[in-house]
Amino acid sequence: MRRILTLILLAAAMCIAAACSSPSSPGQEDIERARESYSKGFYLEAEKDYERYLQVEPQGKFRKEAWDRLAEIAVTIKGDFDRAVVLLEAMYLELGEDRDTAWKIMFQLGEVYSELGNTSKAIEAFEKCLIHAQGNPDHIYRTQLRMARLYRNMGSYDLVAATLENCADSARDNEAKAKCLYELAQSYSFISSWSQAVKTLDSLLALKDVSDETRALGTFLLADIYENDREYAKARALLESILTTYPNPKVVETRLANLPEVEPEPLPLVPPPSQ
Image (tube, rainbow, N blue to C red; front, side, top):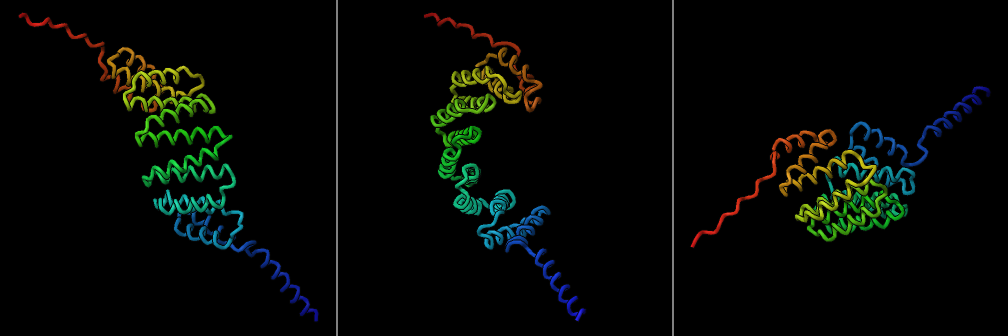
């Protein structure tokens, strides 16, 4: 009798141990296996397990992780942008009530549509980003900057100017403001609106608390404009001022080496031929 009681207690203990070691939810093994596969670079296996987790865990606490990983695999590993659109739109429907999450999903969706060459859908996604970005200056700034580049690719320079001016006005700090102004100056230079470009760059360079790199980029563009206007002395002075701060100093050195030393002499007046 004592032997039987011991066996019963042992069996009960084993059952308890088994219960403790079993997954706490139907998809626990799937999510753990997916994480392990992803960490080892086995992305196709990870993709299958993340998909299975979403299927068996409709209320699972790791659903956002699974969606994020699936979208990442589709975009960066497989380059399957059509699948990424489907994943991100489904993710937005499920998680879009959280403003911050919704902004991130729409921003990524806008980038994916840009890769697909669907500019109208990309703009639509970024417009939704702006709605979700309210109250977050950083999100507003990043969205407006991205939209302006799309407008520029479309050749809609009136929308570029309006978006970047608004970007500069609502920037969270001077560094963000400077980047908006730099993009605006670049856009003016693309349409040969030199006076507007110079005015914008002067505003950028007058700002305080701007990173050396951003300031150097603005200075380089201003030097480019002065060189285009044959004001070589001004261009040289500007280029020499960023020899140690421009991201690629070799570019500055090359420009300086090829820059004329003096201003060009005005062409002499040729008297009209005698009658």
